[in-house]
Length: 466
Image (cartoon, rainbow, N blue to C red; front, side):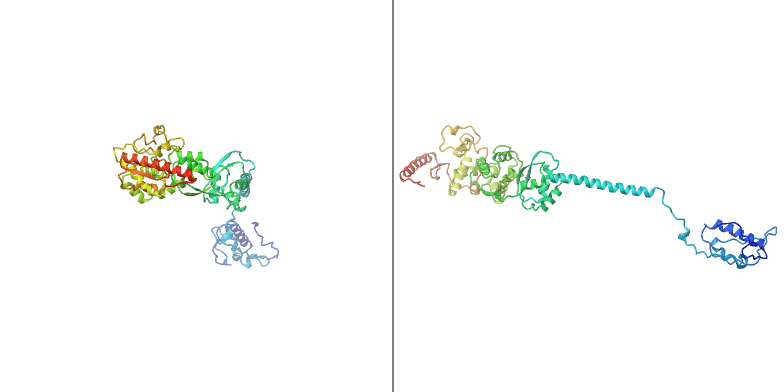
């Protein structure tokens, strides 16, 4: 707005006022004060300006009244002072928000925000692209290390557990991606448990093809372990049925830390598990992990060695180790269940008598020999072994077979007899004696009967069972 004084004498309508000097001074002062106050706070509505001549200041000059803000200027001037030909525009009242100066953005802020946003988007894109490359490499084996690893898939393992096992073995990098791939390719329900040798350079499809079930592959094999079988013979039988290699079973039997209390104090040795591989019928997976195979035997034994058997062993002051050693000898010496408690009584009677420091059980000598013999010689009875009960006093160092439940019960519940001797016949039955003289008579008797049975068999062409 131009703040030059308005000349009422030369206004366009040619009119004049009676007090041009006073009016001009009043207008000039109003314009000056309104220009100074226009940016200030909104004033309250003033009282209308009186048309009377304002009081004079010292010196006789008239004094203009206090000027309101510029917004009230048209209200302060009367038509007579402003002149009839001058049109005064009406100004809208200024609100508080309009009166406040507009805040302007700081220079450069808009450019900086746009630049940061672009950097963020670019960074996310780079990360996604990098992950896509790594994921594609893991899935399709574009560039992977050529190295063999062994991975075990547990029986009943879920697909996620299989994926984790693959990642732990170093075959894959992203188990979640492997899981999704198996799901999408419908190969998640075809995985065969076992121990696999895989290559870290294989892609997902090759891995799943390697470990999946094939219709022409026998998934489960049933193996029956007879009572009295030795540890090494059990391992050979399992290998022959494709369950696991015998040397792996031997290594795990010797060194693996099985968490069973009955093995806690046993030294690590080649025959550490002898006596505890419970004879039974088992189902195994082909290529099953050796520790899982052995755990099936040990878990079965742990279930069979129940509270009643433990209580009985405590009542007769026998350790589980002593029970299993005696049971293993009974298992190898007795052919028929009816004789097991009687043979057990001979062993217990000898152990409790100072007159018989040696058990003199032929089965312990057979166990010490490299190979089983039909008939033992006097030299065989002298073999230097902690299992040879013709030389060592008391019980041998460990079990000589893996006994069944009947032999274990016979070891805990021997028949009450005064027998200290027995002699076996060819048909598997025994003669028992309390004295050495009776024993010698039984030996003569058994020899005659065996010879007669053999003669009859040769002449009849058939076997004769006594």
